[in-house]
Amino acid sequence: MRKITKIVFIFILLLNLVGCIEGNYLRDTSKGSIVEIKLDNAITIAEKEESIILFTQSTCKDCINLRKILSPYLENHKVNINEVVLDNEGTSKAEIQNNRKKINKVFPEFDSTPSMYYVKNGKIIDEIFEVKSEEELDQWVIKNKLDAK
Image 1 (tube, rainbow, N blue to C red):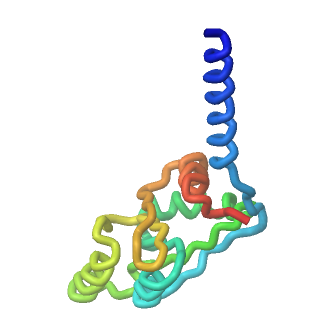
Image 2 (cartoon, rainbow, N blue to C red; image 1 turned 120 degrees about the vertical axis):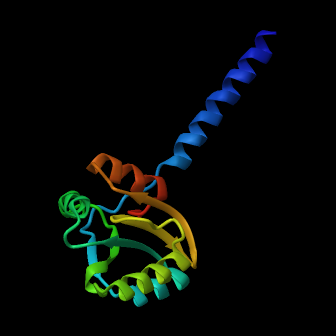
């Protein structure tokens, strides 16, 4: 009975060690970036590449707060973000409705700004809305290994 207990204990210990190793990754601490792109470019990128797409508005309070979180965070996290500033895409009712249709074809959950999506070859891998803290942002980055070397 003792031998079985030891074997089970060793097996559980090894399983935990392997699980911890798989969860870790080497993080790139070089500077990240935010690049403003047009909506049509964001749609093309989302359908064909691996990328982070961020939708914001220049007067949105939560978007401004997110900028304040992102600026220092990107100083030492190699995360590259493509940002679409929606009020630069047109402000008439018709333009807004047309842009909303374009966005919802690729990002069906999009409802408000800020909205950030991790996409890969036309599929949404993960999304985060209204980031409130650097810790929340970092958890999302780690979860998706967005700053991996």
